[in-house]
Amino acid sequence: MEYYGKRSLHSYFDKERRSIQSPPHLSLNSHLKLSENHEVDHHLYSPSRSSNASAATMYSLMPPPSPDSPWTLSPLQTPSPSLLYHCIASLHRHEGTIYSIAVAKGIVFTGSESSRIRAWRQPDCIERGYLQASCGDVRSILVYGNMLFTSHKDHKVRIWNVTVTDNFRGKKITTLPKSTYYSFLKFSRSSRNNNNNNQHKDCISCMAYYHAEGLLYTGSWDKTVKAWRISDNRCVDSFLAHEDNVNSIVVNQEDGCVFTCSSDGSIKIWRRVYGQNSHTLTMTLKFQPSPINALALSSNTSNATCFLYSGSSDGFINFWEKEKSSGRFNHGGFLQGHRFSVLCLVAIEKLIFSGSEDTTIRVWRREEGSCFHECLAVLDAHRGPVKCLAATLEIDKVVMGFLVYSASLDQTFKVWRIKVLPDHEEKVVNIISSSEENIDQLSEINRMKITTEYELNPVLSPSWVEKKLQGSHHFH
Image (tube, rainbow, N blue to C red; front, side, top):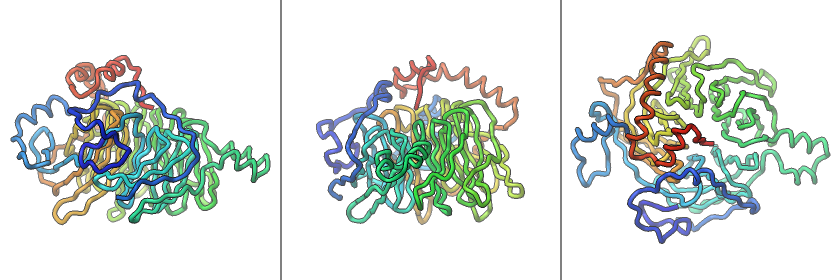
């Protein structure tokens, strides 16, 4: 990796490449290259311490920022003082892709094609250390308390205990399920067979943790979801969830409901059977046939509101609002702005952050007490599709601040500081009616726009655009 800021990182960066005028063009081959590493699981730690044409036009109408100011005014249809943003750190990885990000206790964890899970200090991304696993391709990372969960190429989950003090330390606790060799020594043949049945048959693409019951949920490209009881590391339930890859999973911490989405274009809501470990399907949400790549849940206990957001391959972000009386989720509309697939979503407070195949990150705000949303900012974040996002809240005396972490298929990892000013009376509403007529019209407009916008966007890599136009680009 290469650091475009303070040069205080250690041997992880190539010190010879000091001057880079622009990030490298996206190469499809670099996306698909996998790294192999067969070392044993152990811990090593290092020493402590583009927007569209209208947005481009908007830039020309805005006054140039002060040379001493690192802040950039958000490119909106009309100048808005609602949000300021600033990229405070940028790292470039020479090989492989960053697949996953998790943030906890002042540390940012990143998973990639490598077998090392890196730990970085917030917010300046000074390297704190890394965890060494025997297998790479870390597609999903989850943190809760001192526990770190990582999924790997061998279709297993590793659980680590991490300690963040003056020195970063970590130790692997166990693997889910237990390795075949361990099972061979400790258990009977029937137990070993049962252990093998509990293992996913394909990539574990997503994880979620239900705090109250200590249950870890894993979703896989084998179309199944498994529930693991962390107290004894047992798989307590496994069920076929979808007809295609399971791409994202979230848990409502208030009632334990599990939400899954898939490339089959559906979202499903599951609930545990009372007094049992099994799960039952309670509702299926399928508003459009497009594959769904990401989910985010936004709930507020003070006013009992709950919104579910989904990002799909048609570029839309659909959202559903939970009825307070019945508990059903009703479709509230969708947010339009991204030109290509929405690959990742994060919801925190009243904000929604969306990362897209169109290389941008959009910041949306939901109006208090309603379903109206406005797009506060479009961040020209990367030169390739934005694969994963994470965000944390920063407390400020006057304004609400956020730290947003993004990773892209252009092999860069960036940190953004975002400051959101209080709501203003004028609202730029980007919510579209959910009527079938509008959906058909917008879909047709999108299809007409796409081919021209490929050529208009100078950020996208030519090789990636060529693959996209041929319909052969695949993010997995």
